Image (cartoon, rainbow, N blue to C red; front, side, top):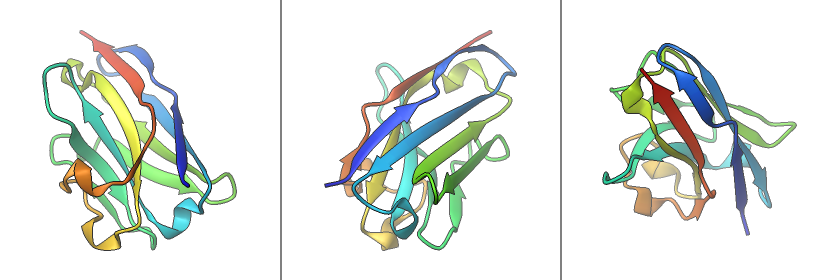
Length: 126
C-alpha cells in the first residue's frame, strides 16, 4: 500500500515561490511514476508535472519554465519547486503515484494514477 502525504502549500503574492513536498510511504518512489496535479474550484483536476522512474520529467505547458519536479531518494520524498507564481496557479495541489510507467507524462489522465495524497492548498494573491 502506497501512502502519500503532501506539505508545503501556503499563501504567497504573485511572483513568489513555494516548494511542495510529498512524503512517500510503503514503496520506493524512485522506482515508479510520480506526479503533481492541481484542481481549482469548479475546474477539473489537471496534471502539472511528472517524473519517471529513470528521472525523465514532463511539465505542463502553462507552467513550463516555472517548475522543477525532483525527488530525494534517501528521504523517499517528491518535491515541486514553483517559481514566479501567478494568481491563476491558485489551486489544491495533489501528489500522485502510478505503477504504469507508460503513462508518465503531465497530460496523463488523473484516473491512471492509483495513489493520491490529501492535497495541499496553494493560494497566490495579486
